[in-house]
Amino acid sequence: MNIEHLKNKFYEYYGEKDNILCFFSPGRVNLIGEHIDYNGGYVFPGALTLGIYAVIRYRSDDIVNLKSLNAKETVTFKLDDIEYKKEDGWGNYPKGVIKYLLRDYSLKGCDILYFGDLPDGAGLSSSAAIEVLTAYMMLYPILKHDIDRVELSLMCQKVENNFIKVNCGIMDQFSVAMGKKNNAILLDCNTLKYEYVPFELKNYSLVIMNTNKKRELADSKYNERRTECEKSLEIIKNYKKVSNLCEAKIDDVYNCIKDETLIKRARHVISENERVVKAVEVLNKGDILSFGKLMNGSHKSLKEDYEVTGLHLDTIVEAAQNAKGCIGARMTGAGFGGCAIAIVESEYIEEFKDIVANHYKNKTGISPSFYTSVIGDGVKFLG
Ligand code: GLA
Image (cartoon, rainbow, N blue to C red; front, side):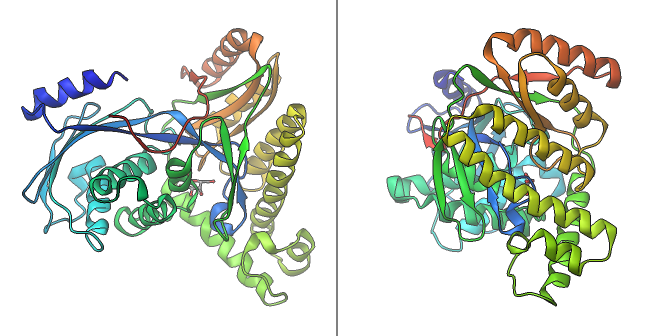
């Protein structure tokens, strides 16, 4: 995105040229460790170079105006009157963030123009991106470089849980706030301890495959999975002292749980958490082939045990896994549509995209999209 272009657009909309600042917040991709963040285990995401840009002008009154180049509606409100309104659509994310920030900071109004090159509804965390971006921009004049990015991500997660009412874990907001170029983040979701791991793929590339199937039932099924995990944990706790499902062992699951569905859910969580640890181990040794195999294992577990894939994700992942040059593929994010990722030998990428697109289109009638994004930085000031 050309910043000057966005600033000119801001001028067209708001008639102001001076004192405007531009910021960027990335989307994220989770490399492995799915449906683990709310079970206290390890996830391994990275920030993308795709994301959301915004230009802001701070006002001296208490009015906030929000516009986006990606949407028609304008959202306007006063700082002392912020409520969730269905008709405000995407505007509810910035509204929630500003409402929560006002609990700790005295803020003035502002005019904001957003633009995203991140497909929404694709499971690449456009909602975390707009939350973290808004929070960072609002705090920037007050705190500049002292913004605590971990605190920021925790606050944005609260907005998502309590204002938007999606019961997500911490992974998305954390990766978007803490991303680092060419590094994935190994995050322990129980303690929030984290480590940057260089994501170097030598002659391979990370390909993001968008099924272009909007995520369906994602919120209700997501909450259903969370409840199933909580139930499994409660049962295990009757026999053993564990504080989250990732602390349990697979034998605890077989010994304590009788319900077939709960066994499958817990088995996914425990095995996936182990896969993350192994994935980082092999990546650190430069063993990308083993990393790819773990990705395939992750998808199988999400399909058969956690049951969050469905026709579109399974079709695209299977096509990818069978394509020449691909050493591993899996769905990424919450599931039920959205995106999958693959690791592909760089010289075969064009051929790979053709084969996967043909196979996927024949079976589903939908054309997929591909992004060969690299891992980028977290939220930042651009100028
Ligand atoms: C969504 C949620 C995250 C995480 C993933 C699944 O992206 O927002 O917190 O649970 O699903 O790994």
